[in-house]
Length: 302
Ligand code: SF4
Ligand code: SF4
Ligand code: SF4
Image 1 (cartoon, rainbow, N blue to C red):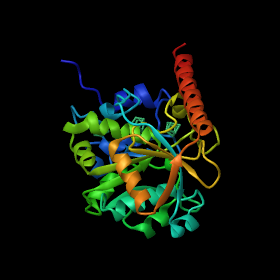
Image 2 (image 1 turned 45 degrees about the horizontal axis):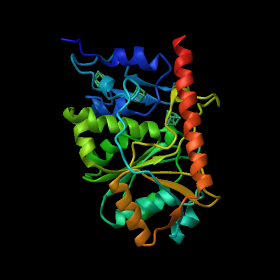
Image 3 (image 1 turned 30 degrees about the vertical axis):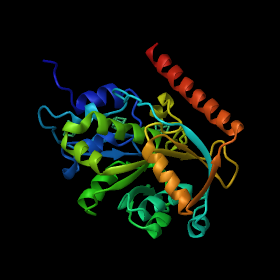
Image 4 (image 1 turned 180 degrees about the horizontal axis):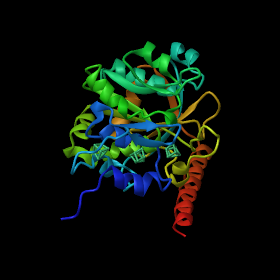
């Protein structure tokens, strides 16, 4: 029987090799999450185990959940691309980015599709913080956070354990969406991944062109990233391709389409198909990121 791998293998094969995306998937699926065994250290750019702690024998959930050990498989889906503006005045006035993500989440809350949303908020002079928003005011308060600097996925545990929620929306970067996809497809048999994947009803990905470390140097793990738009989400949102004040939304799944159309119908957003120049720009940038990620992987093999 093949020996089961564990955190020491994750450290050696992914973290020490500069491949870690800092997605937080391993922390979220750690068997001892409740004990704070594994945590994200964003200053050191790595997940770390508490000092002098030892993993239980035959565990290794973290290893098998990591999207950088093995990429999740992309399932066929839709790819409808829109130029979108928020029509909710309160949200629009409060959100410097135009408020499209907030409007989509507010609509999903109003529709009772979800009871809360896992988001990330920036705190002045401090690290970004994962927060649960359960109404429009909460969404507005948390809007515009730096998702690359917080383990958004751990918010699912927070939503279940501390807020008692059964249905949540998850917002995150493409690598966080890929990590969640691994929970959904690979981790069904593990307790955290199983519980978590049954409560996440909606995944909203955020376009990501790369994340910078505290020293303004590009993160090593981002250099091998190939996903610009968050393909493992129901809906993804970003600014590429749309004029100032509007956002680009890509609908990837039937559920995403339902949420999008409902937000349109109830006046949270206004949308039109993105023009060809915008679509071409997204495809070009996606291709550039993919090629850069592949080239870096090749370079590291030499
Ligand atoms: S307890 Fe298990 S899941 Fe947590 S870090 Fe150790 S091997 Fe990984
Ligand atoms: S890529 Fe994500 S799951 Fe893998 S080691 Fe890094 S933080 Fe953990
Ligand atoms: S570039 Fe963005 S999506 Fe890719 S690993 Fe870095 S933070 Fe994650």
